[in-house]
Length: 167
Image (cartoon, rainbow, N blue to C red):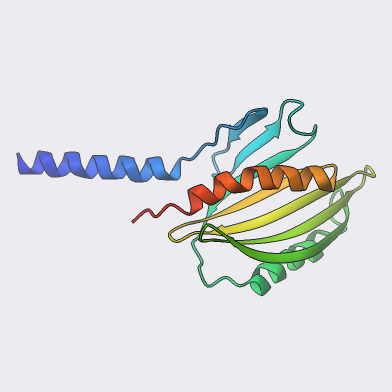
């Protein structure tokens, strides 16, 4: 009987751990899509958000020692690596900053990508580092103000999730 109780307890703990990793936000006006690689996408599907807007997040390795300089250097390296490849004509990275919201470190950087079809995508890429877990949060759109509005709209919910202690 003890083995059955231990097995049931183990299954319950495993199920709750799995449930904690499966996070989906309910956001009005956005179509939700979870991919097998762990990236969760939200695509604008109404007039509440701006056409062509996409916001995504993904659980990331929990690296509490990550610095803003490390974060910025990583994104500058990616910009240099991908500029001029495929459909990408140019990539600009700017405005790295860090803030704390409700005990969650938020590092973010802005990026502009010029495409071969003469369009530009404006992006805010962030890393949220909570007490026990971390997430990336990315907002893309054809206009910088839309990108910022969408990012800030999703940020509060993601901060709440990243800030929950899991242990």
